[in-house]
Each structure stands twice: as C-alpha cells, then as structure tokens.
Image 1 (cartoon, rainbow, N blue to C red):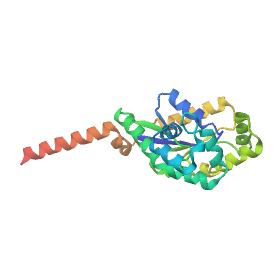
Image 2 (cartoon, rainbow, N blue to C red):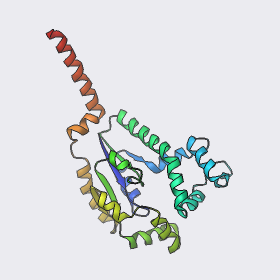
Image 3 (cartoon, rainbow, N blue to C red):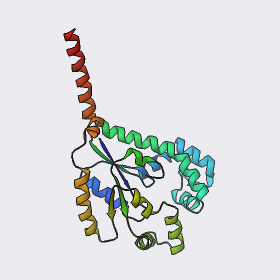
Image 4 (cartoon, helix red, strand yellow):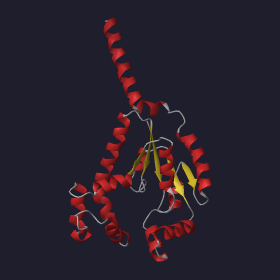
Length: 229
C-alpha cells in the first residue's frame, strides 16, 4: 500500500489538489475532517479542549466555536501548541482508523491530506510527500481575498505555520501553485503519473492483497513441509 503525504499551507491551494485526487478516484483521508470529528460535543477531544480553554469557546448548542478557538490559538503560540498536544492523540487515532478502513477495502493508494504533516511527525509514514507551494506574496494576497482579513491578521495566521519554503525542502514532489488553475491542472497530471506508478514489492506487501498472498504462501509452505516429513 502506498500512503502519499499531501501538505501545504493556508491559502496555498492544498484543498484544491486534494479534490483533484478525489476526482480521479484516489481516496483521501482529510485530517481537517478528522479534527472536526474529534471536537464534536461529548467526545474525548471535546472534553480535553473545554477543560483547557473554558466554556467560553462553546456555542449555544454546546459545540466548539471553531472560529473563536482559532482566533485564540492563532494569536498565542503557547495556546496553539497546547491545543495541538491535546488533540494529537485523537487525530492520529482517527487517521489510523480511516486508513485501516481503506486498507480493508483493498485500496492500494491512499492520500493523507494533513496540514501539519511535518509538525506532527506523520511524514515518516508517507512516501512520497507532496507539498503545494506558493510564494509568500501570493499566499498573503490569496488569504486576504479569501477571508476578507486585513494584512496584519493574514500575516499572523501565515506565520503561525511552518514556512512553505521549509516544507518545500522536505518534499519529494513540489506543486508550484503560483499560477493559474490551468497551470495547476497540468502539474497535477504529471504528479498523478508518479503517484499511480506500480507499487514496489514493499508497498505491495503492505497492501491487503499482499497480506493475503503472504498468508497463503505461509499456509502452502506449511502444508508442503508437513508432506515432506
């Protein structure tokens, strides 16, 4: 099984690339969706976060006000690290369960869409790693346009994440998304060829099909061994 790591930064276009993978029938495990699920009212993650940040972050229905929580942690690195530390075990478990479900279905290629791929040390479980990159000026302008935020707020949100230039150095594949959507689609076609190339023997052995074949080989070997005795 091939687990592809997909990451980028805020307003880099990572979600667009993630959707392109989905449109080609490649399953994507979205860490943001997993994170939303672990923050639902009454879950372990919800209890930890409410205990740490107080009930002021809750909406009238008891669900976490994600926008309010985001404003708190983006402006305070210590609180941001606390939130990441509290939710990391739940998010990791959630991602593992989603990957396991896809493995059981026989999926040979899975994309992990994780904004904090490097920060959460999940990059060691993925190969290749795809980073969606844009230059700082383009990233800033796109974020301000998308969210209607002022420059100072946008810069604060961008600086709260690992630099895209740093992420670029850690990537196996870089998608430069400073151009048009057409440019992005052309690059994606090239990336798709790399992602969908035949599995290596190691990757195949980790797939459900490889595991079944391995068990059958062991069974046949045992039978033949008994017959030779």
